[in-house]
Image (cartoon, rainbow, N blue to C red; front, side, top):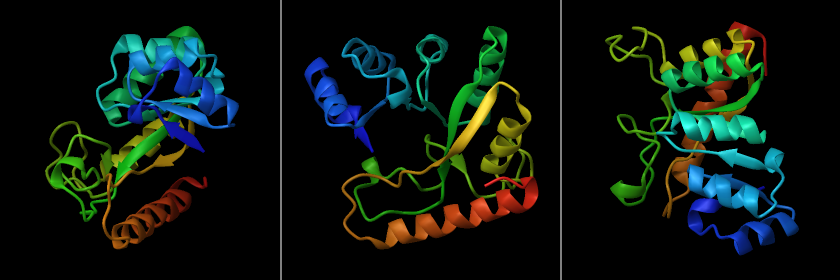
Length: 191
């Protein structure tokens, strides 16, 4: 179980989380630095963020964080190249966007199409922005991750938003992500 550092990460809260047996999710280089300084085991830290800098990714690799949550194929390719240059294997989860409109305020809903977080499960109609026409960006990312010797694909990550008022969105998101996992298993033979 992970403590969401974005809720309030100080040295004291990071230490408390670690003492209670929680891992710590960080969403920036600053939060990552706090967790490390607080003594959280690097393998118990995750690094999130839809716009991670090269320096943040390098710090995560140097520290040996337990998971780096990747939001785009471009980020995945960049991380794979940096890890390969260092002779490392980056532990990666792919953040997928299941196209769910959660019952919450629009500003904190994060799983609908056409937003900045994650890789869509919906095939790209146009092939624009580096996406292959007729192929879901999440499928491209899975293939890319599995082909990169410098990436260890740990799994998928999905977040549909905060302050959800109805549970239906969670069920729909789970259904779509599990359906995608079945496709991955059929195509690549991995679970």
